[in-house]
Each structure stands twice: as C-alpha cells, then as structure tokens.
Length: 116
Ligand SMILES: [Zn+2]
Image (tube, rainbow, N blue to C red; front, side, top):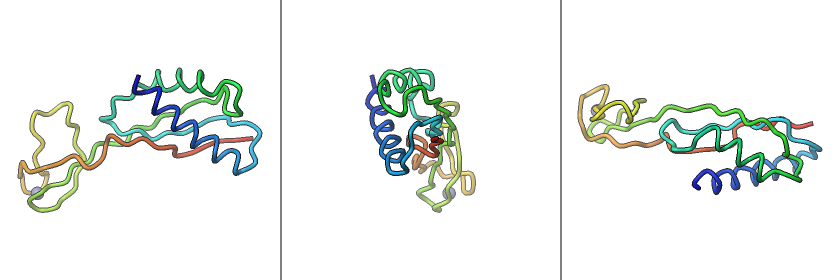
C-alpha cells in the first residue's frame, strides 16, 4: 500500500502546481523515481487514475524516469552510481573502501507537469 500514500502526495503536488498555473487540465506528469525505490510504475499509474478521478488531473499519463542510486564513500568522499540490488558489496569506485552509504536512489519527485 506504499504506492497509495506516495501517489496521493504526488497528486497533491501536481494539483497545487496546476492550479497555481491556472491550468484547466493536466495532460501528463513526469516523475523521477530513484532506482532502488520499491515503487512499481504500474501501481503508481493505477493509483493516480483512481485518486485523480474528478480532479483536473484525471486521465493524466504518468511518465516515470528512474534515477540511479548514488553512493558516497566514507573514506574519501567520492560519490558514484551503483546498483545495490545486483552486488553484494558496494565498494568505492575510487579507493575501493567498503565504507559506502546510499545517499540517493529512494527519492521520488514530480519533475514535469504538462497542462492545457
Ligand atoms: Zn573512496
């Protein structure tokens, strides 16, 4: 049910921006979702369709772009993209330290709203 809460908050952002811009209808919404987020694209669209019923965002097409997960090395401070799902251990691309932490890749945000 995670998608439902996330989609609800995204819809509020979309509606606020659309109203502020004097839009009469939202045609599409571009979302940026971190690669390691557990959000499923299909469910986001499905919940959006459900939640936006009766609003100016009804029928809007959701376009999802995935942003890569970024890690930061605790030893040298280097930031680098890596996929935590396919590797057992994330090592720094520069100094090979194992002291790395995920700094982004779970975020989700509204990147673009197309209105008429
Ligand atoms: Zn390093």
